[in-house]
Length: 198
Image 1 (cartoon, one colour):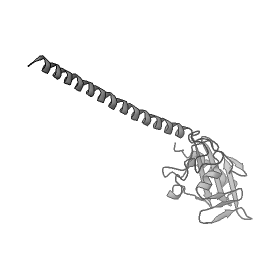
Image 2 (tube, helix red, strand yellow; image 1 turned 180 degrees about the vertical axis):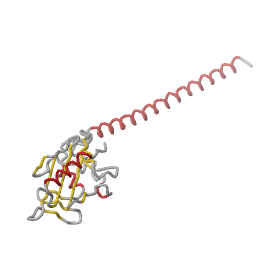
Image 3 (cartoon, helix red, strand yellow; image 1 turned 45 degrees about the vertical axis):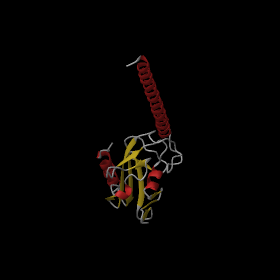
Image 4 (cartoon, rainbow, N blue to C red; image 1 turned 180 degrees about the horizontal axis):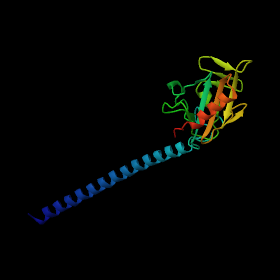
């Protein structure tokens, strides 16, 4: 084999190695560019998620960002001595902001500041004001000469709870009927003895 042939072979080998090296560099740059684009998209998505505010669809008007609070409160709604059952699917997780969950009929979960009990009842398609409690099917229980709607927060009688924002471990009683003070005390005691699901 002559020198000329050896040089041609070495030149081909060097040329092949150079092409391979250039190809690897090109593939590496493409992979880095794709990775950078994916990282930017993921970073932007995380930023948007972490900075969601009350303008998120379906959120209450004056609420903070989802996750700005995580409070639990107990509630007992008693109509003519019967407890209202919030464990039915019609009342479970109807809003991300405030809801009942896990088939629990007692514990309210609030996930943002500024979310009131009125928003909870609206999300469940229930109407509550200082005089009436109205079910989804239109049945209403309103204060009249014979029966009274009574509202309690932490054992204290209040005139209205719509604008109330729960805090951790609150206990809320809504009672409709002709209960005596002793019967109301019994309901409040029952409420206090229940355990919140956190």
